Length: 72
Image (cartoon, rainbow, N blue to C red; front, side):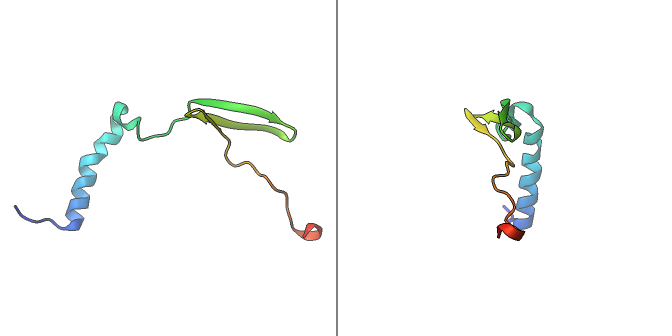
């Protein structure tokens, strides 16, 4: 058996595993799909998030105002 270089090993492994991403049944476990979108009303407007594995997730929510100028 001939030894292969690290570069050859990584290249062959990548070629062997790439088709897995295109098989719907297998690749579903690799992704993290949102199961249910949530829209809530707050005193400052609406927020859109989603539910994943029983948790409500809201990303990109600003939580602090500017501290520049007179507020500094």
